[in-house]
Image (cartoon, rainbow, N blue to C red):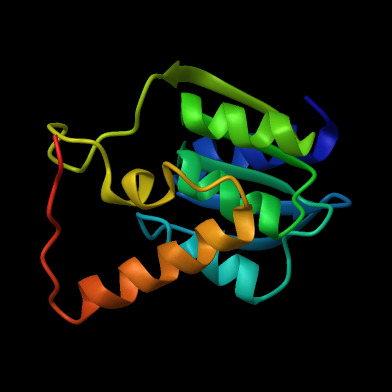
Length: 148
């Protein structure tokens, strides 16, 4: 793990953050908010390029955000197998305390809807667009339908 990624991971743990972005030894972004919104905000602020990203949970959707933002490396407490696939394909250094087959929803019962919306997408930028569309729909009160 490189110096920036070690620093980001240390801050994530020590300061109870949910997301930390570090580049050249400087913290560019941090958040305690849960969910993927802080990572999307970091993408919008254009701080991901060349940065080390430490996030509590990284699934396929979050990995696509990191790839779209051209992050240099990603660390997570829990990383989904889909995230490993996306980050590996993009050549982004990644490590996790635990890799799980799938990221589950907040109740721990079903696959996370953010994972589902990016499941069949291979182009990260398209995944981010689909993700933003889903989040906008959810904010407007749309219901999620699960297919089994």
